[in-house]
Image (cartoon, rainbow, N blue to C red):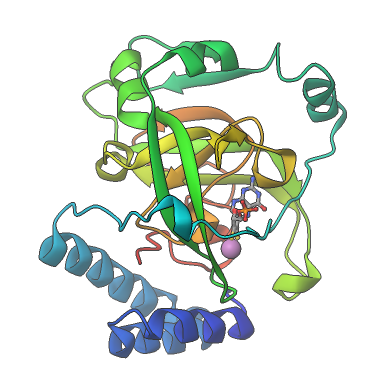
Length: 263
Ligand SMILES: Nc1nc2c(c(=O)[nH]1)N[C@H]1C(S)=C(S)[C@@H](COP(=O)(O)O)O[C@H]1N2
Ligand SMILES: [Mo]
């Protein structure tokens, strides 16, 4: 279940962005116990179709270089800290690889150097966390559409599931008692092929640092902060997320957050 505290903050932040009425309704249903999960899901579906139906595949707002926040708060995991991850940091990620597998005809395994040689996109966008803070950053990376085209999706492909290097345990800042688990996220192909959906290896013109998800993170700009998976190790193309961790499509989704975190 989403923590009341988080949801209240989320309503506070999103209320200012419009659509406060239905967002508050959604928040209430999420705080009331598992019997209301189904209602929450219906409202979530409605939010998704409202955003996509009314606004189409619009672009998230992009900002100017002068708008970049001097401090971009790192959140969630600051450092995965596993032996494997520490090893990659020590080697400057020279032997790290991104794997793309699942419902594809051509599974890929790409080094950071290879990713950096591919066409890139740079965008200055605002990141909104459910905890009630925002920051503007400049991200550079490979459009996910390009990677998925290269992997050649099978006809039944529906989702991109991104697995991360960190195991997240209870964070005091988020109410504490979450069960531990590997961080992961998922998006559908409509978001995966959106022009602003990139696998970013640079932030504000520098290689992504450990706190912000080195060496590679997702930017899916029309969704909230928790969808922006850091420390991404693989992208699995699937036709559902049942059977993956808690079956809801993400670490926080498995703990009650909405899967479609549109803003
Ligand atoms: N792997 C991983 N990705 C993650 C998280 C995390 O803990 N682990 N936290 C999420 C949340 S809640 C937010 S707000 C953003 C924070 O990104 P930042 O650390 O660059 O600010 O990352 C998201 N992606
Ligand atoms: Mo967040």
